[in-house]
Image (tube, rainbow, N blue to C red):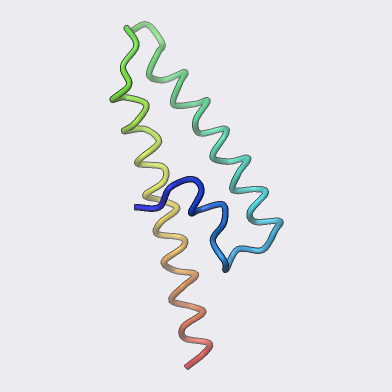
Length: 74
């Protein structure tokens, strides 16, 4: 699974996409904090699961970028 660092520093992403991705990750972190801490006790597992699922979706995007780049080189 890619970390936030891996996503932000992926070599195939141009600077504009990197900036949007960093902003998006920050927003998701805030959303996860709000969802996980609203009307409940603090649960680190909730935040971890929330952000982990979001990062998995970015893995799919990065895999697709890699596939397209490999197809272009072939």
